[in-house]
Amino acid sequence: MNLAGNPFTNFSVMSYSFHGLARRGAITIFGYLETARYRYGLTTADIWNGLITAYDEDYIRILKQNIDERGLEVVNLCCDGAHVWDNDPVERAKTEDLAWKCLNLAEKIGARTIRIDAGVREDAFTAEQLEYTAKKYREYCRRAAAFGAKLGTENHWGATRFLANVENLFAAVNEDNFGLLLHLGNWAEGDRDANDRAVIKKAMHTHIDFEHCVDAERVLPPLAAYSGCWSVESHKSTNEYNNVAFQLAQVKRVISPMDYR
Image 1 (cartoon, one colour):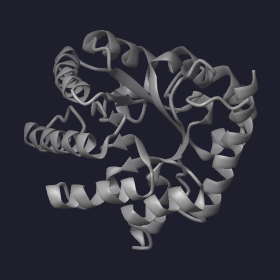
Image 2 (cartoon, rainbow, N blue to C red):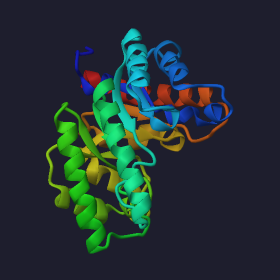
Image 3 (tube, rainbow, N blue to C red):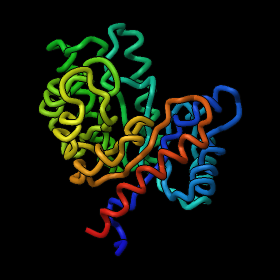
Image 4 (cartoon, rainbow, N blue to C red):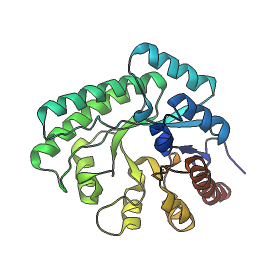
């Protein structure tokens, strides 16, 4: 029986999956919303800010209208270029400015989760980097909490691809709504599947790449403790509509039967 509100019925497609088409001018954020709703039959949007062309109130109003017209819920907003730490203080000020713009956008479009990268490119945090990054994440988390959202990092690049660093960051931030966007298997060391299992209860959102979708029967069931949205992300940059259709079908095929357990 498929119960309302069961997290295993919750699927999405990350809009970065169409970055190849976007680079060629063949899709916009509005085309993505149409694609998610009517090509794939979803009621969710997982938005990459690389498709966002402005942050002014008129643009946000039009975007929100298009989201609402399609009956979509924004399960995640990924904010590239808004990372917390940068070794260049001038650049750090720019990324913080974008982070606050993204938080305003997230509130206005009703995003449930927001990903802002830590930004540390080295393999580990220095004491200064960890202190600064944790402080900023606390500020961002409190802003997100004001509209009921979770906010966090991703095991995406740099220091956050190491499990110990992610665990240290969680301890340093210590906010109830701080979470991890778990990019399945994207770890720089250790047993990648075991690392995914170790942090799954901290995951506020997931991104599942093509390879993990191919291997879905093996890698997804052990993550059953996860209670958020299962989102597929294609990095192929070619044949994107069909790759996404395959990935989404694979995840649904493996996860949906778990509704009956």
